[in-house]
Amino acid sequence: MKQLVLAAIVATAAVAAHAEGGIGAAIHSFTLCDTCGHVQTVTKEKRKGEGGAAGVVGGAVVGGLLGNQIGHGNGRALATVAGAAAGGYAGNEVQKHVTSKEVWVTSVRMKDGSTRKFEQAAQPSWKHGSVVKVQGKALSAV
Image 1: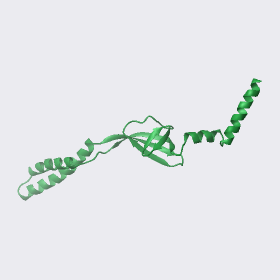
Image 2 (image 1 turned 120 degrees about the vertical axis):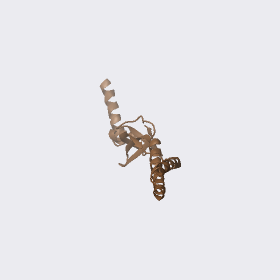
Image 3 (image 1 turned 180 degrees about the horizontal axis):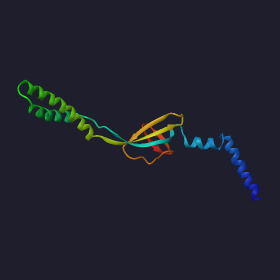
Image 4 (image 1 turned 90 degrees about the vertical axis):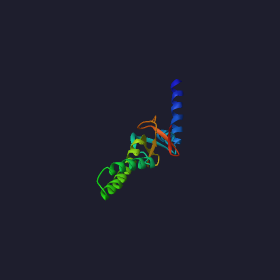
């Protein structure tokens, strides 16, 4: 009697799975909604910050003062201008370095086979193989 009940349950499950396109198709469609995908990689990367007027002006002032210490006459004026230009560039680069940040980049293979990358400031909870859902420009765990 128990074997008959068990056989009936297995047969019912098999028919239901077949009607859905098979057990694999049922699981696949559940895990990969239209906006879902599998995580391929999660990496930490450094992004250069923004330069700005403060770095340029500060660097130009310091460079101009240093350039003014070199040469005499027209050479001094040329050295001051060159020092200001070089200092402005250097100050801008220093500001970019100071304002740099680290981000987490997640590469996701979408249901349609395409690969998309997403950045976020905090370390994500997912890892390689996890299923995630795309919500605009962000990801969420499924």
